[in-house]
Image 1 (cartoon, rainbow, N blue to C red):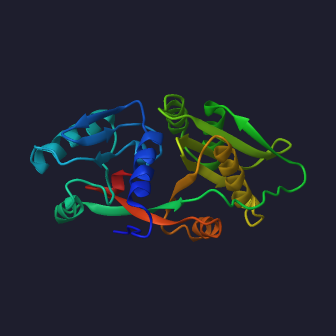
Image 2: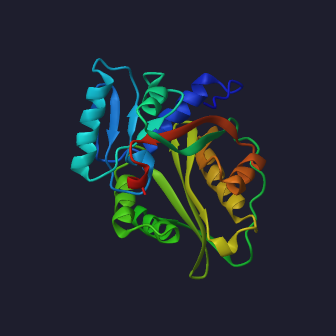
Image 3: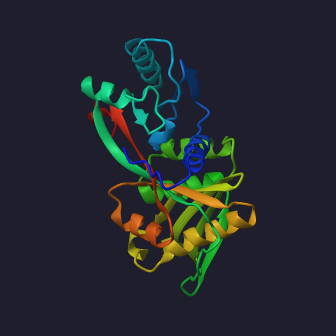
Length: 261
């Protein structure tokens, strides 16, 4: 599993912890060192199991209890696997049970926010700061999310232990792009970055991310992280040009991939 040893271990761990805090839904509980998240929203990081610590119960018993919890919530059972997962061989154990691998993801980091480059908008574009409900509705519609998923997204942001700042880039009434950031101390995370397909190729995403990082830096952020699909070459290329590098990878496993989507 990808783990960038050129980056400070404490920065990688801080990014993982910050990502967990930023994605915390109200519907979560601990089970023998495992964090069970049961949000009905679309984001898998808020409706999965994070195995944070080596527990005392046998694996089959923990999985059985997780299965019951997800069944009660009407959700498919999904386990998130990271370099920090405990037990360390959980991925191999789940694979041996026939659990399927999916959604290979990269956590990318920018260790220093000192050089962020320029922000340029096409004529007539204005960046608006909006509330959680409005942001969830806007990005949810762009992504084709169900109304229940949109409402769960808004609920998660409203009750988040760390504050979200969501922004919409508009030209008149036309939405061009959106993005938000979550700052926790000196570390800021970028989330839900989305450019309308017809508007891509103009550098809107890069300028939007740069502006979000500028605002977070003004509030005290010194480093940044984001999460992006490993196969999203377009977005990864933008982030690499901005100075982000791969920090570590994570993926998910499930006993029934067909039930996840």
